Length: 148
Image (cartoon, rainbow, N blue to C red; front, side, top):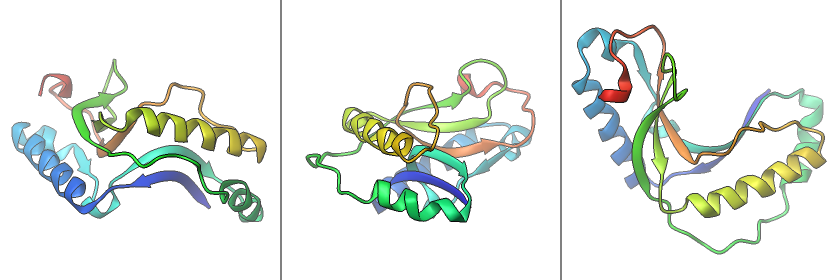
C-alpha cells in the first residue's frame, strides 16, 4: 500500500491554489504548459512524510504508532510563494510554499518522524520544507519555470 502523512487544506486554500495553477499554466507557452500535470484541487494537501510502499501487514502497527493525539496549539496555514523542485536542474515539481504555519508544521513533521522511526519506518533526512505540490512536470520543458 502506498502511504503518506499529510495535513488537509480548507476549501478556500484549495480554490486559491487552483487559481494559481491556472494562472501559471496560462503564463507558459502551450508546449510547456502541456508538460505539467496539474494536481486536482480536491487532492491538494501538505505532505508531512511520504512513506512509499508499505506492506499491508505493517499498516496496523503504523496506525498504532501514529494514533496518539498531537499536543499542539491551533495555528493558521497561509500560502506563500511558488517554486520548483529540485532547486537546480530540470524541474519535476511545481509547489506553493506555506508561510504562516511553517514552524508548527515543522514541529508536527518532527513528531511524526519520531513516531515513524520508532515503528521501524525510515524517514527522509532532507530538511522539511512546508509546501503544497500543485503540479508535476511530466516531460522536458523548453523554458525554465524558475523565471515564470
